[in-house]
Image (cartoon, rainbow, N blue to C red; front, side, top):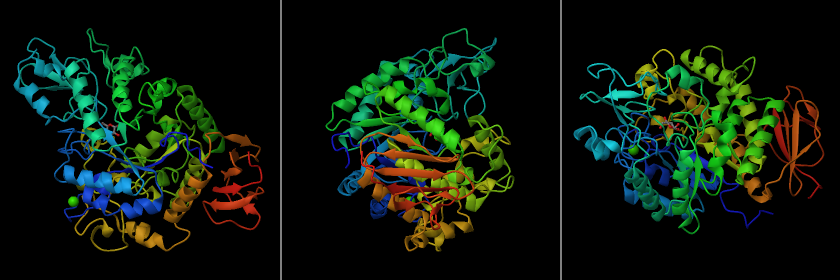
Length: 551
Ligand code: GLC
Ligand code: CA
């Protein structure tokens, strides 16, 4: 059934591993590459096509590893390059491809080139690899402008000689100057380094930020905030990124099979997203819009149609994703009341305020959140295109909203005090067993403390329960392999609040978004996101059917 002439990635299920929180092989509380190696059978049993590793590079962890000291090495706390080679070999032997994260917008302040820049004089070639400007005011003590960084505070950090460097994120993450040819060449070398080691693909962090126009006079923060990302924005989504990625494409295409990439793009980029996903550019782009649609038939259908349209425009396949290491886990998100009116801003803001209350207000609907998460995930897995899963969602894991402040690590917590508690709650190490130190994550503690309720979500506990979320994911991924055909979808008539679509080969997916049962459509039930009652499809449930309609 599957379309064997299509490139492997177009409809792949990619599983995101946050290495420090997946499995710890030596009991030091930090997940590592050997830990991942020890869980290859688990990844195989889950049935994913590829794994994406969040950064594992040497890092002081000012931003969870997205502050990279050295792009061509492994953090000694996580392993070695030999471990990495072993991991690639083991994944490939298991038929699983590997994506790694590449962070081209900024390095860490410990990167050797940044250290050289600090030691060098203003105007030197060393400083030109980053973005330095002289301070404002008579003694150059004030930042060059009033721009605010993504994690709070000024985008400018003084270096003590009247000059400042630019950082869109934490002060420990100086932005590269992509106008500098040495920087461009350095990243091509890094892409080749990992491709030569067998890496199949790259997830490109902050893919929209590389090209900047910081010429003076500067716009004010207020003016920048009011602008849409795009050609005229000083640093987001400028046309200049296209040329950079054309150069990357040449490297990708020099391998057989060509290496692939997926651009991280947040929701504001909708109208220009397709550019990143063409085969002249990165080849795929994240369409995060579905994360903010909530659980509503009309909104979900609209996003699916939009995303399929953008993907078609680029010639690429669509990408579906509900959770990652930057956002409240979807089992929790879908357990919070719907904002009124519902839009992406409101969802983000509600999540932020819920976390600020440490998960106390509003009270999370735990059972409902999981029910909706399972139903929506099943819908996504039936769509054409690729799906990105985030570690732990296959366990139905919820956000850990009440981590003690003393345990928090995310810079957004420290830089935006009282406004944002940050993203640590979706990065808590996985529970593998129902008891034991760190629930089987390792033999020691977990670097972010796990709550007692993690015991109920463990892999061990779910293995033997046929109705568990883990077994639902396994069943869905197994079936999907057999059902997958061309990237086509046809909407079919359905009652209000129900979405039904057909895929080639008689595969139908029906989701009941309402709270009441509806009549079960004809067909053989392949799998359902929750218990079925005789002759009807219960509320907040998805079912996959096989029908006679074998187009
Ligand atoms: C991306 C990453 C996020 C990180 C940021 C800065 O958005 O996903 O985790 O904080 O880039 O590198
Ligand atoms: Ca470890």
